[in-house]
Image 1: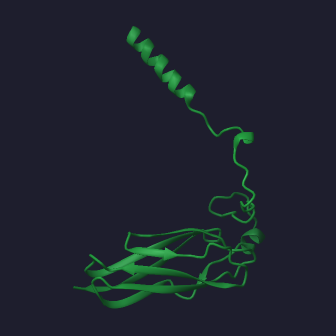
Image 2: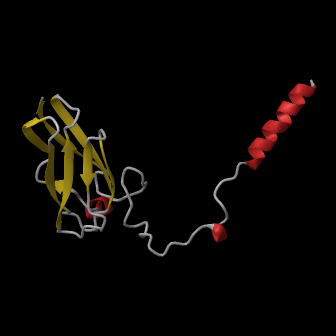
Image 3: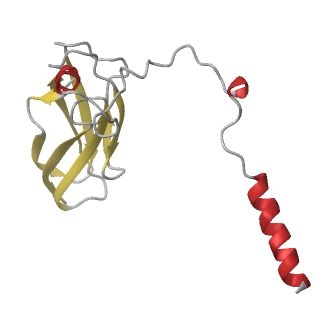
Length: 158
């Protein structure tokens, strides 16, 4: 019985020690943060009207697939995926991640104004890769789609 009481006391102390976020006066105040209205995402936000959705930024690519053809193992290839923000608000790219360590995306860190064009560079390192390769890049944005995918493919010869 004492063992169960001790276990209960320890469990209670553990849960009591867990805290949520610190009080607002202890949270850092960063003046460089973007307003929430710019990072509103239809996949996570409730209550958007059709007009609000239509005004959201877009990330419209000329092409989303690049075939690098046949290369020699160890070669590094890259491709610039050109895109345009055809929305009415600035496009913010919050992250981009390749499907493996051999695929490295580079993206603009500044918001892309409406009507402007920019580039997402994707680099593929074929070292240690042989045969047919298909890799992807997952892009997270505040666009009307939220997530955008890019693909590269080709054959690596020994």
